[in-house]
Amino acid sequence: MAAEVIMPKAGMAMDEGTVVQWYKQVGDSIEQGEAVLEILTDKVNMDVEAEASGVLLVQLAQEGDVLPVFTVIGYIGAEGEAVPESTVTAAPAAAAPAEAAPATKSAAKSAKVTSDGKLRATPAARKIAGDRGVELARVPGTGAKGRIHAADVLEFRPEADASILAKRMAADMGVDLDSISGSGARGRVLKADLMATQKPAAPAVVMAAKAEDTLIPYKGIRKIIGDRMQESFFTAPHATLTIEIDMSKSIEMRKSLVDAYKDSIGEKPSFNDMVILAVSKALRAHPGINSTLTDEGILQHGNINIGFAAATAEGLLVVPVIRNADQKDFRSLVVEAKDLGRRAVKGKILPDEMQGSTFTISNLGMFGITEFTAIINRPNAAILSVGAIIERCVPVNGEIAIRSMMNATINFDHRIVDGAPAAKFLQTLKRNLENPYLML
Image 1: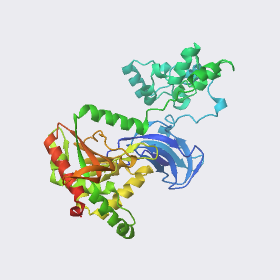
Image 2: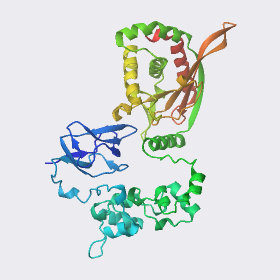
Image 3: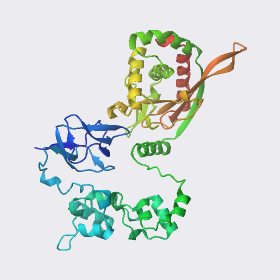
């Protein structure tokens, strides 16, 4: 019996996933445990591995499809083995070679009409089309013989059936988009489709005029991050406080620990590790900062789970979480932070390892940024922005001295936290980092 390939539930908070790319195509041999496709969960790309050996019999989802967890997205079995009957109509038609692409939109439409003149469409697709006032005949079907599924109707947008660049080009060229056969997903008209309708010399001027434009898709991780930042910024009233911290003694302590920690745990402590330690102890002293606003009231968390912002290799933001940070010694914090950080950069961190933070730290000091304000990582009540350590002339006991100074800025949700408690938290943080040996 054919083995299912399903959209996995990779974390407690994961409800759906996006198909990023298939590593295997229909007919390819697969070994058990081998990666079949890549999916996007909540800000994390991960591989889906085969549960059995065989060949890929069918793909039931295409790149870019967003599907609920536990949805069957493919089957693996013996070559020629039949898949369950109920999935046949849901399977997208196998990709044809480029030269065999449909010639016209009218041909695609006729393929989804039965011999008695009825459109091939699922009941769900018909209901959604009726509710939305969508003309089914205009919807490209992705099922067998052009059958229209609910997802086809949900994704159909008459005003957006061409890429932005294609629309601009069509306007410049005076071309009617409805007369062009689209080769993109779901019949979407692409730049190449427009170029194919023109004589060789005609597109040259258009291409020169648009050569500097680059369209970057706003989807996947980038869209998830954007949506969350927008929600946080326009939901939580942000207030900001900044404090200067003399990091001279922290620098001395780190130097004294580097060799010993390298020998004992194989890792060197960083200043970010020291900030995590100092924050965890400051939150224990000021539990009001370690809070979340709920429908029932302000929830002060008993556990201190610190998230720290990290950038993937593509420059995208993820936030690994160190749970019960205040209960761990410095060695344990260093090891865990390094492990989470490395895997986050490689995109190998698990969704559950980015859930449950009660406070977040964002450190841009390594880029030379001296001061900034980060957007709150909701549902946290606050986020700490940490700048670079810079040598400056400062007054010390009535004299000018050179000290290694660092700015720390707290951005807090003013519905939950007032200015005075936030200021006291920063004072405690400053005391911890200016007297670091007291934290060990």
